[in-house]
Length: 314
Image 1 (cartoon, rainbow, N blue to C red):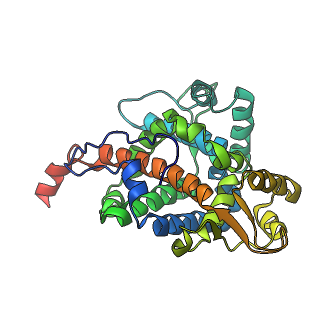
Image 2 (image 1 turned 120 degrees about the horizontal axis):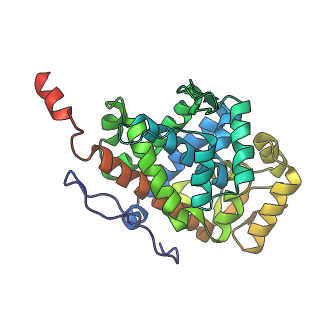
């Protein structure tokens, strides 16, 4: 599979002696299509369970802003980082990586507060400083996102990442900042190209692609035109709470690129995607999975401080 771009490997040396999976290795795994389909279906189920909360992670810009903000929250909790998590610090980080303007980040933050996706934390003493923290429901969604990716990685190499992650009470707060650092600093994540970029910046664009790719049969992955299971743009738009006109415009752009089309009447028959579009999506997932694997290995590849001592007392 040739994406036409260099894939990120983030190093291939593990602290435990286990080889980290590079993006190239992930893409080359013949079982990848099946696991990517399962992962897309998991993401889609999460969105269906709570569309408002799921939308935080369903658009490229909002997804990156959320990861940036959460990384500050979790780092605040660690002994090495005592800085408070405030709106100003979030805006600074978002601007540093060029994710969005301060005004866009401010609007996003206000939306999260309005829907109690993030909440104000108890003050540290200075009433002028309003601290922020994620709600329990937001932590559940984030945790499920990480587990879905660890499960895919385990499926690819028979690993036990999920078991190790679940057994560590501080797993989420340890791994998320490392994932965020790599996501925010990877150009291929922040600036996707070609058809993939048409949907990543669309409202709920991530869900659009999860729906498209979660409905394909891995056995069809080598066809030039791969059926998706999508039959109606209107039904699709209604489910995603998107403007049909806006969604249709994006589909037309993708059609002009030869990335998708319909077997019969446009918008009223089975939609297909091209093999090139599938490879774009799979390549993007491989880069993200390599990022998660590198972060996992940095956290759990060797015993955490105190782990060996606790184990000896059991």
